[in-house]
Amino acid sequence: MRWYLAARRLGAVLGAVVVITVLTVAWAGIPLPVPHLGGGVTLGVPAALLLPAGTAVAIVAAFAGAGAHVEGVAARPLAALDRAVCCVLVAAASGALLGVAVVWHQPLLAAGARNLAGFVGIGLIARPLLGPRAAPAAPVVAALLVGVFGQSTDPSAWFWPLRATGDVFAGAAAGATALLGAAWGLGHLATVRRGAGW
Image (cartoon, rainbow, N blue to C red; front, top):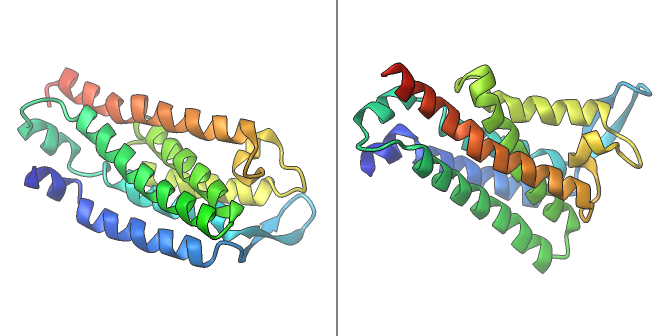
């Protein structure tokens, strides 16, 4: 198990997740100045809605390196273990945000927990499409696109990370994206490596 923890750099990833989660809690209501191309006016997007993209980068990056090497020395395919570890990381970070949201009555942090799951899903879906090295950038690109094009008093469903905390569609979109990422994104490259005989 030590070789797995080292190959996936889980110590560094966990540290990054803790730091970004703490910053998300501390800066939850601070508006991030994101340019709004539709009207040319800079509007503030609450940090709690976009900072979880940084946590997602750290989590997705854990599965970006040493993939072929890890698979090569493993006694069995690691997709299931990768999924379990990914789910634990997401659950821990999201659970921390939700816990603080409930205790401190901060609904923005509940939306941040939702967005974290969705951003991780986006990064994992990008793995088979862009490759494991480029995939960690996908959550940040998604957050920037949402921030730039989605600002509105009533954001479109396409920009679900900016929708209200209790928005049913936003929750469903984030959950579906996370599940697809875990099921397809983490399993796809392992299947390709085994099929190619790596």
